[in-house]
Image 1 (cartoon, one colour):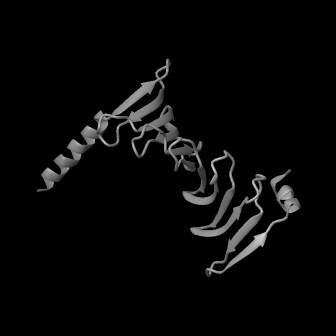
Image 2: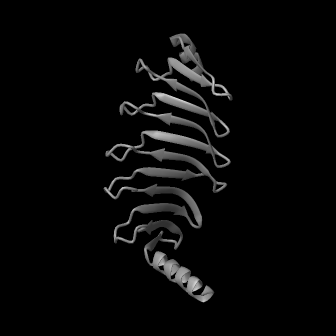
Image 3: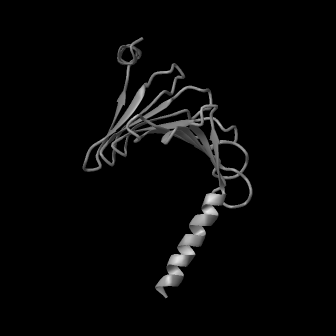
Amino acid sequence: MFALGVSACSTEREAAKKRITPEYDKDGRLHLLKYDSKGNGTVDTWSYMDGARVLRIEIDKDGDGAIDRWEYYGPDRKLEKVGVSRGTAGKIDRLEYFKDGVVVRAEEDTDADGRPDKWETYAGARLASVAFDTTRRGVPDRRLTYGPTGTASMEIISPLDSQAKSGQ
Protein backbone atom coordinates (compact mmCIF):
# COMPACT_ATOMS: atom_id res chain seq x y z
CA MET A 1 0.00 0.00 0.00
CA PHE A 2 2.82 2.39 0.89
CA ALA A 3 4.59 1.74 -2.44
CA LEU A 4 1.43 2.77 -4.31
CA GLY A 5 1.30 6.10 -2.43
CA VAL A 6 4.95 6.85 -3.20
CA SER A 7 4.43 5.92 -6.84
CA ALA A 8 1.40 8.22 -7.15
CA CYS A 9 3.31 11.15 -5.59
CA SER A 10 6.23 10.53 -7.94
CA THR A 11 3.91 10.45 -10.96
CA GLU A 12 2.26 13.72 -9.91
CA ARG A 13 5.67 15.34 -9.43
CA GLU A 14 6.79 14.22 -12.89
CA ALA A 15 3.59 15.58 -14.45
CA ALA A 16 4.11 18.94 -12.72
CA LYS A 17 7.71 19.11 -13.99
CA LYS A 18 6.45 18.67 -17.56
CA ARG A 19 4.29 21.81 -17.11
CA ILE A 20 7.33 23.99 -16.28
CA THR A 21 9.27 25.72 -19.06
CA PRO A 22 12.56 27.36 -18.09
CA GLU A 23 14.12 30.22 -20.09
CA TYR A 24 17.77 31.20 -19.86
CA ASP A 25 19.65 34.35 -20.80
CA LYS A 26 22.54 34.34 -23.33
CA ASP A 27 24.97 33.37 -20.55
CA GLY A 28 22.92 30.32 -19.59
CA ARG A 29 21.53 31.88 -16.40
CA LEU A 30 17.90 31.08 -15.52
CA HIS A 31 15.73 34.20 -15.89
CA LEU A 32 12.16 32.90 -16.24
CA LEU A 33 10.09 29.86 -15.31
CA LYS A 34 6.72 29.50 -17.03
CA TYR A 35 4.26 27.17 -15.32
CA ASP A 36 0.89 25.71 -16.27
CA SER A 37 -0.39 25.14 -12.71
CA LYS A 38 -3.76 23.77 -13.81
CA GLY A 39 -2.40 21.40 -16.46
CA ASN A 40 -4.76 22.82 -19.09
CA GLY A 41 -2.08 23.75 -21.63
CA THR A 42 -2.02 27.46 -20.74
CA VAL A 43 0.79 29.12 -18.79
CA ASP A 44 -0.67 30.96 -15.80
CA THR A 45 2.39 31.56 -13.59
CA TRP A 46 5.59 33.37 -14.51
CA SER A 47 8.51 33.33 -12.07
CA TYR A 48 11.18 35.92 -12.90
CA MET A 49 14.52 34.68 -11.69
CA ASP A 50 18.12 35.72 -11.12
CA GLY A 51 19.62 32.26 -11.44
CA ALA A 52 18.15 30.25 -8.55
CA ARG A 53 16.76 33.34 -6.77
CA VAL A 54 13.13 34.33 -7.31
CA LEU A 55 12.70 38.07 -7.96
CA ARG A 56 9.00 38.26 -8.81
CA ILE A 57 6.12 35.93 -9.55
CA GLU A 58 3.12 36.93 -11.68
CA ILE A 59 -0.05 34.83 -11.63
CA ASP A 60 -3.21 34.76 -13.73
CA LYS A 61 -5.44 33.03 -11.17
CA ASP A 62 -8.71 33.17 -13.10
CA GLY A 63 -7.33 32.29 -16.55
CA ASP A 64 -8.59 35.44 -18.29
CA GLY A 65 -5.16 36.31 -19.74
CA ALA A 66 -4.50 39.19 -17.31
CA ILE A 67 -2.23 39.04 -14.29
CA ASP A 68 -4.18 39.04 -10.99
CA ARG A 69 -1.35 38.71 -8.47
CA TRP A 70 2.24 39.91 -8.25
CA GLU A 71 4.64 38.66 -5.57
CA TYR A 72 7.94 40.50 -4.98
CA TYR A 73 10.87 38.89 -3.15
CA GLY A 74 13.84 40.61 -1.52
CA PRO A 75 17.53 39.71 -1.67
CA ASP A 76 16.98 37.59 1.46
CA ARG A 77 14.51 35.50 -0.62
CA LYS A 78 11.61 36.52 1.63
CA LEU A 79 8.29 37.82 0.38
CA GLU A 80 8.34 41.64 0.58
CA LYS A 81 5.05 42.65 -1.00
CA VAL A 82 2.08 41.32 -2.91
CA GLY A 83 0.12 43.22 -5.52
CA VAL A 84 -3.43 42.21 -6.32
CA SER A 85 -5.77 43.19 -9.13
CA ARG A 86 -9.44 42.74 -8.36
CA GLY A 87 -10.61 44.20 -11.66
CA THR A 88 -10.27 42.96 -15.21
CA ALA A 89 -7.61 45.48 -16.31
CA GLY A 90 -4.75 43.42 -14.84
CA LYS A 91 -3.25 46.32 -12.93
CA ILE A 92 -2.39 46.41 -9.26
CA ASP A 93 -5.08 48.02 -7.10
CA ARG A 94 -3.86 46.68 -3.74
CA LEU A 95 -0.31 46.30 -2.40
CA GLU A 96 0.40 44.39 0.79
CA TYR A 97 3.81 44.81 2.44
CA PHE A 98 5.31 41.96 4.47
CA LYS A 99 7.92 41.66 7.19
CA ASP A 100 8.98 38.21 8.35
CA GLY A 101 6.07 36.65 6.44
CA VAL A 102 3.39 38.84 8.07
CA VAL A 103 1.44 41.73 6.50
CA VAL A 104 2.50 44.99 8.19
CA ARG A 105 0.70 47.48 5.95
CA ALA A 106 -1.35 47.74 2.78
CA GLU A 107 -2.28 50.41 0.24
CA GLU A 108 -5.35 50.24 -1.95
CA ASP A 109 -6.72 52.20 -4.91
CA THR A 110 -10.46 51.80 -4.38
CA ASP A 111 -11.59 54.30 -7.04
CA ALA A 112 -9.30 53.10 -9.89
CA ASP A 113 -7.59 56.48 -10.38
CA GLY A 114 -4.10 54.97 -10.10
CA ARG A 115 -3.38 56.39 -6.62
CA PRO A 116 -3.83 54.82 -3.19
CA ASP A 117 -6.81 56.16 -1.25
CA LYS A 118 -6.94 53.60 1.54
CA TRP A 119 -4.08 52.67 3.88
CA GLU A 120 -4.09 49.85 6.42
CA THR A 121 -1.57 49.20 9.19
CA TYR A 122 -1.29 45.99 11.18
CA ALA A 123 0.00 45.12 14.65
CA GLY A 124 0.91 41.47 14.28
CA ALA A 125 -2.11 39.69 12.84
CA ARG A 126 -4.47 42.46 14.00
CA LEU A 127 -5.68 45.37 11.86
CA ALA A 128 -4.55 48.45 13.83
CA SER A 129 -5.82 51.28 11.63
CA VAL A 130 -7.36 52.17 8.29
CA ALA A 131 -6.95 55.63 6.77
CA PHE A 132 -9.01 56.98 3.87
CA ASP A 133 -8.66 59.78 1.33
CA THR A 134 -12.27 60.86 0.83
CA THR A 135 -11.36 64.15 -0.87
CA ARG A 136 -9.08 62.73 -3.63
CA ARG A 137 -6.07 64.82 -2.54
CA GLY A 138 -3.76 61.80 -2.31
CA VAL A 139 -3.46 61.97 1.48
CA PRO A 140 -5.69 60.52 4.22
CA ASP A 141 -8.37 62.72 5.79
CA ARG A 142 -10.13 60.05 7.90
CA ARG A 143 -8.63 57.36 10.12
CA LEU A 144 -10.18 54.49 12.04
CA THR A 145 -7.99 53.12 14.81
CA TYR A 146 -8.73 49.71 16.31
CA GLY A 147 -7.67 48.78 19.84
CA PRO A 148 -6.50 45.31 20.80
CA THR A 149 -9.83 44.62 22.54
CA GLY A 150 -11.92 45.54 19.49
CA THR A 151 -12.57 49.18 20.36
CA ALA A 152 -12.56 51.66 17.49
CA SER A 153 -12.13 55.40 17.23
CA MET A 154 -12.40 57.72 14.24
CA GLU A 155 -10.19 60.71 13.60
CA ILE A 156 -10.64 63.48 11.07
CA ILE A 157 -7.23 64.54 9.80
CA SER A 158 -6.74 68.16 8.82
CA PRO A 159 -5.09 68.91 5.46
CA LEU A 160 -2.07 70.42 7.24
CA ASP A 161 -1.56 67.25 9.34
CA SER A 162 -1.82 65.09 6.21
CA GLN A 163 0.70 67.17 4.27
CA ALA A 164 3.18 67.15 7.17
CA LYS A 165 2.90 63.36 7.56
CA SER A 166 3.23 62.67 3.83
CA GLY A 167 6.22 65.00 3.44
CA GLN A 168 4.43 67.52 1.18
